[in-house]
Image 1 (spheres, rainbow over the protein chains, first blue to last red):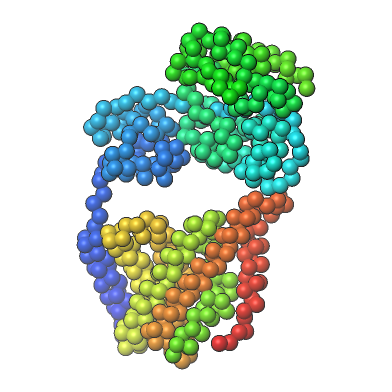
Image 2 (cartoon, rainbow over the protein chains, first blue to last red):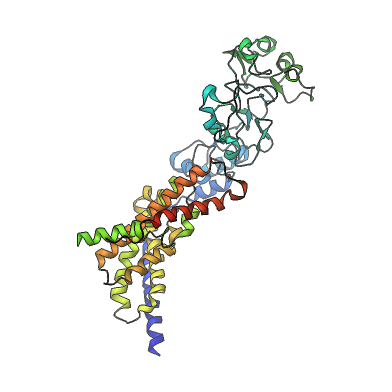
Length: 277
Length: 195
């Protein structure tokens, strides 16, 4: 009988003592956790995308409560998240502008030729370190190895004909893809803005001829056409001030390269330039 | 004495490497070795827990199990002690050293009942001639270092595999297991060494 009782009691006693010690320790080493942190974490998107600049949703919630971080950083949660956080924290809600990521390159395989064949590591960063910033003639364009695809927590990015394409409806605006893109061609555009310049090339017009048949040549026709003065051409590249833009789409009509995209416009036939390669 | 400790240490790290020679602790070895950073965190946590567990179980063996003549309860008693120890350390770190907690914290619960940790404590007790406290600590710490070395090497290999052109049927886990076996093969070169 003792051969069973003794070990059972001994191990039971060990367990009991350890349990008591752990209980004491949990009281002794108790760390006060602000319950607001958990509440705020619940309001955030939960995507842990890192778009707010913190390690994850709970890290951001902690930063709001402890370090007074701004409450409008969760682009995935949008206005609803900001309102909820404002209520928890007892501060004024700020208006938040929902954004989406757009790849500012139109240089698909047909319009932007390669200057050499690349057989190296299938990774944008590796390819971009080589001669000419990648295998394309245009040193600004998308290389199409999908670094952004891996970065996207929503699975909203695909490579279409050699250029990354982002599904605007899936995009939560976290900007992860923008951060990893070695060519810096992904931009966050306010969701209300449907007109943007889908090119990042600063090459001059003549130099552009053999690099990309649709890229911006800096002709300034859009700058002149814009009634709101929202377009400026610097370094042979047009850029739109989204605060000033009135979404009229005149620039997109005027652009000889059809590089300014107007999502509001009805689908138009493909640009003649893009067919003549 | 010093020479003996060095011999124990070198044996635990290279000749009797826990992961690559004894095949213990494979699940964190495969699971947490995708990035060198996380592998480092995991390896440090294992080293930490192995050292502490070696100390605690030595006392348990000496003052509870041997006097009561119930050495056969080793496995159960050690599991309970290690689990409680890890919980305690986790609470202690959270309160006292938050920076260490944030770097090790998420790995600690993962290795509560890891077989490598249990293995090192059980093997400590099976040595002939029996290990003293110092030898147990050195063996626990060195076994942890051996785990750290193995998981770091493997994480480095896996980071490179990410960018390699691997035949489709081998992508992901198959190639990871193959490279782990090659790594184990390399460590086989140490076997038979006596210090």
